[in-house]
Length: 134
Image (cartoon, rainbow, N blue to C red; front, side, top):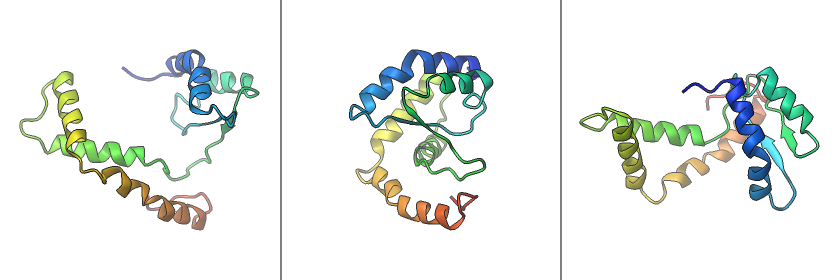
């Protein structure tokens, strides 16, 4: 299923306020998203502008590097799935193998990605928000 601007708007309008209130019970609500097409669609942009008093929307600089380690974690897990034999044949097989790959990761798996953040931020600052090797 492809995420369209309209589907993304449905997610925003249905879930964002409650999610932000749970995540940021301290009142320091700041919403951040990347420049994916559904995120920058007219309908989503208009909705975010209309609800700007409810939370701060962090504007992602154009052509900025990916600073979110979740992409790297996902890639590592997908790589583990690709190495499996036999390869998953359907979505349920894939989900099972993906979950098993997650469970098989060593305890420090996530920490290795967290530890890259100082280098990522330093590279980001050196590039003044432009492209980096991350």
